[in-house]
Length: 400
Ligand SMILES: Cc1ncc(COP(=O)(O)O)c(C=O)c1O
Image (cartoon, rainbow, N blue to C red; front, side, top):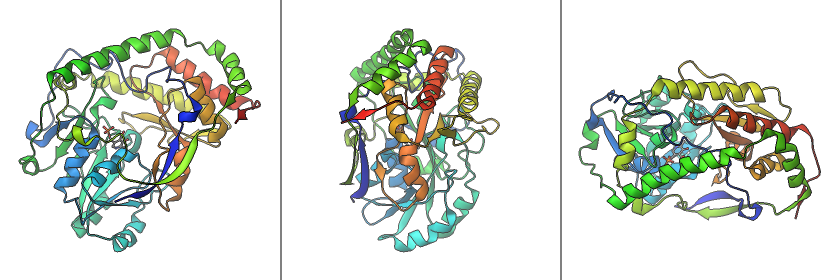
């Protein structure tokens, strides 16, 4: 199936690499002690990324030719890729502005489906637990498998965040977003019997070595980049950006299948042994504390800025956030300037089109900013100064 997709291509802009890492690095968040799993290991399978764990969850739920997956209208393409790779249809369900599913719209959607709906993906965006009780009841009534997407939650063999993983028949997560591991995707099945027929392959030793090298070089790169972070230089840097001519990004419609981020040749491979060794040593309390502190710093710093606002100003108790979601009024020029400065930002600006107003608004207006445990005070000060200054004064901006 091909989906009407909006592709945002920033390549003409020549954005520099982020000057602060988007994900944890080094040994940050690791402890010497070995943690105990909260469920027998027969309930878990490890993969190279969450997207390949999703593939197995979709497949085991019956997604393939002649079936449909319901997925959130606000998404990154790797959430849909595995269903498309399996030959299934994808229908997007709308979300409220707080990113909770619009339950009232679901029945109409299954009536429109060209094929029976076999599975529904429900996402705990940014690590904030959503209450999926009513959604789970809706799925059970219709014989649809609920898959909880815990890719933004610190859901792993050794930690189960409050409110996450209690409703889905399957839960999928991405441990590499919380621990400094080179890869990692986790599949949890409430009924371990569903995983009995699922076998995985071990990556080659050379990939283990590449993984270790990747982890080491990321940490070294971060040390070097950090030395050049100076809030005092931001005014001059912004003035230089404003004075220069920049090519604009290309935003285009395309009928698209799987994205380049989905590699069929990576399907079925387990996470690296090196990554799985790191997963056994999480320092959960320090990860939670540091991420929550950084999130609060972001919220305080952006709450009263004129051009942006936090999507969730308050963190629920016990929540370990993945990123800090910030809504900006004017992607142009503010997103572009932040990227030109090298501020680390994720944005789901390439995604399949739906009639959901929230998804269409957030595609270009919702920024995902890092709050992970590897950030230092200096990193936070620099990023916050950049966000504050970028919106403070409008200077001339040239686009060719
Ligand atoms: C909400 C969500 N679900 C699933 C995925 C796929 O996870 P992974 O990057 O581990 O393949 C992503 C990608 O980052 C995601 O943001």
